[in-house]
Length: 373
Image (cartoon, rainbow, N blue to C red; front, side, top):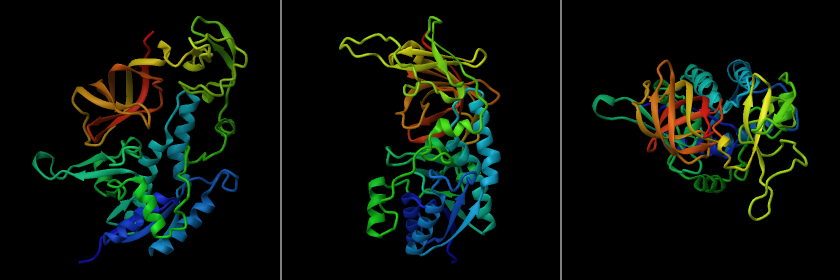
């Protein structure tokens, strides 16, 4: 019987490298595919594409798999980057990694892999896929959290659908990151000690404000406290996100003191697009930073159907612990969540992702929230 062919996205990082080795060990015919998604300033000091390609090729040689590069820069610019800029221009804070997974890694990449004759695709994400085996759900697929809760990436994958999951393997879903590093060192992979990449895929480590400056029109405006007092000027709504503490630029603004005499920090609490105003508040627990409810739109459900109304758990940002919530469908691809414990800095543009235990149900883009005051 012929081996199943798996095309795996190899980024040059340690996760996808070990994932490729695991697939080969499991008996698959493995082909590596290196995706080039950004080329506007590929020679800049912050862009590591060239080194990543060298690392991916070196790893493929050690693991014993063929690898090729494919350029998705045009698709990325149309489907991910353009939407990213639109959201920032509208005063929201998007999560391009969610869109990149849905539009590039599990759409453009999947299509390309199928043209290469692949039976399945794989990535180095920390998540799991489970095929239901009995009853009315037989043949359906579920997206599950990774066993390593500290690395779980199901939040970024919540827009995947049944067709995509049916063709996808996540070899790292059952193991911990520490074990991935151990395997890489045991195999003497050239990138065994390589740092994990951070930040937005196309921005890398570059200064974020400087990057946005090149692409967005922006207009300075007033920075006010809740009582309407103007205390400074912001450089443009797009450059601030709710809950932001650093880089507000208030200088010597007088602030209340805590009981121990320390000054309470200032946070961005609201953005008023119509008046081009940013409101700042003092103290992390200010009522304007706490939301008992949110609404979300542009929904995407792993099963293809919205969950029934009732109690579930949710994340409103990555790396947040799951919190209890009451889910209600608002029809027409929208829903609301009510939280017994108000949530901090719920941010329009980010994803609200719903879970039932370890099962990721899907979610939507936060469109609004209600503060305690």
